[in-house]
Image 1 (cartoon, rainbow, N blue to C red):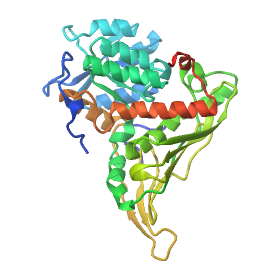
Image 2: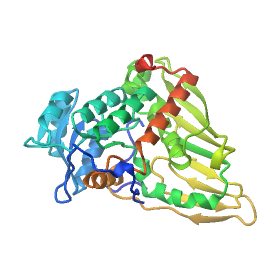
Image 3: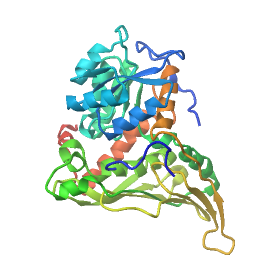
Image 4: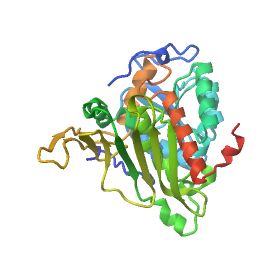
Length: 380
């Protein structure tokens, strides 16, 4: 089942409570309920197109400006999606849309290559804007912590655009997990043959497989099962990773095992499978001792079943599936607009701390499989 208006196959690839995150944003000016949240967009690729499609369907949002490293793509994006302003650089956009300007922007949406997420997020926060940054939040733990620290210091809104947290299927799984009792085993899978693989095999080096751009299966697809495990279960105690590497130096597919050795989930292992070289028809599973949750997709779960006493004469299945319609990024965008209008500094459902934890886990996995990025050299 797919949203009615947009395919969710990428070319590669419960309201939050009140907390300190929902404190007023200080010097950052929030939109009122009477006007939409105004976005500036960085990037003009497929993910930024998904964002524009969601904005077109969301009355509480509008795009004021766009910038791209390729000006012709920014111009085409603006023409297609009715964006009034284009800019040659991020710096130009930040200077042009301050709160006192003719076309103020509230939030910068960053849909640029992975390697630019940290620097662009910090620049936008320092300039007084809120930021919604695509996954992965950053490439290295030092970058992720610097982003979080900048948001804390400036009082700006900051959130990773990890769509899964806000999906209705994820809410259904959160509600059903206690029915499993003690969790013993989970297998979370995000595998999809990359359309970029054909170009790579022909001798090209697309960003999806370029270590200088933060490419590879782990950072592009592995982040989904890893982030989902952290979302449901918290930080693991141990990380064990294996992978197959391409000649470019990034991984094509692999497995990350998250071990929970203590606390509420002591004894639980979560196997996170990711691949840009294979399809997946099996879905994912979270299991207790006598029942299991089956889900069709760990990024956009829709078909969900609770299976009791599987394999026995008394096996029973309860359908917990959800119907998901609308734009791919619709639920995420609606929640961002709600939070920004309320003057929140982030999301309690997907807090910045969880994004930082995911990058720390992924960095440990990369170290074990031998994938290095140029930014690793700047780590303390």
